[in-house]
Length: 493
Image (cartoon, rainbow, N blue to C red; front, side):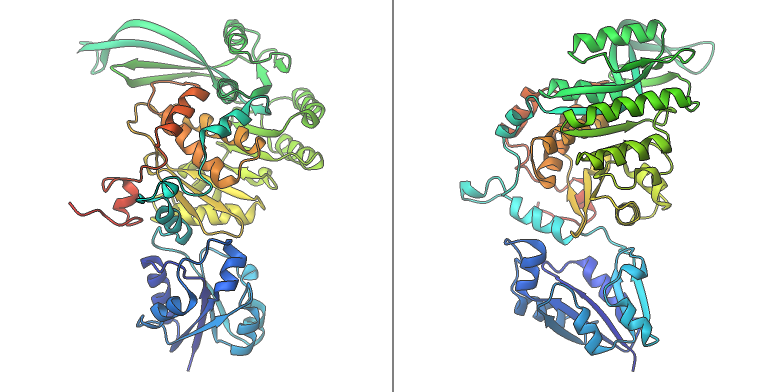
């Protein structure tokens, strides 16, 4: 008889658990489930957990056709239980390397098998617990769940110094209307009505930090051209210092020109040079970062893959930040994330995360697999994957993934929303907020940003109003994409 063993807290039993247990049972003749006791769950998850007592959790597991036996254990891990049970097959849910699975060495030593089963359904116990505690409640004390951000946190943003390293750009907008199609080609004719300029790339991160009350210290390169001079003027108007901008001879300022008609982006024209920056430029950047780190609260790397944040520079500044006990947040469009090893937090979007983790982007579980892989492979503390209209998923070391539903009421333009996210995260962490509160706040800030056309820096007043209006208390509707995937109960019509 082949005995299969797996374990978990199973605080809120959901279809993802059922699917995993059924697949584990198919690997042998008997499935034994190790269940963390109430004391063990509290030690791992905090004083608010478990929601369901151990006897009831065990009863629900035993009622499943796939489970033959449930054993409750008090330790944080089932290592002792695995030694005593000597299973033939050890199963771990997720995309774990075998050498990181607790008890794997004991099972392999006896000639057994250790199998990591990727999650096929996008469920998260912690995410469900978050939803339960955040749901509507008749008592005012339950209106905002413990740990949710309040307007008062924004006062702590004032004076926080955030060092921003990355690709500085100029965003140019032409606004117009479309009334007819060109007789020369099947393209719209746009009658220009106006234009605007805005800081882009890492400069937009700095602009958001400034508009939220923080002090951005922007480091990067611009060209000695008209666009560079225009950009310097825009930054000065927004109170962003120019003293750490390096004019790189022979390299044009990156410009993104977007043509907007009827609040829709029709086309974008890029003017850029993406060749790697020269050694002298990289040396000056590294020297500048090294001189500034001790005087700032946190470092943000905003990498648009334009040739500045090369692997050698990224690795060097992350090491310097560690030496000075400063956390590093990385928002990068690079295909290879290995140079960001040791950062505190990565904030890729869904496509970027899949590419960096080597996961097919069309996999139903691409977010779960990519987030888990990046978290482990790069030795970071957390990975936050942004998912447009599906919100964000946070992967934090030692915790289940947590899903944050989108807070946007209407999406007009996602341009620059990632910059808003990383700027808000930098300030919130610098102000001492927990990671969960930080992500809630960044998610709300992104929801505000996408309600505007074009690159925009949200203000502290906008964020404060959204918090006071209770936008965090409003759960997703049945039409929410997350609800459609089964991550929350549908409401009756």
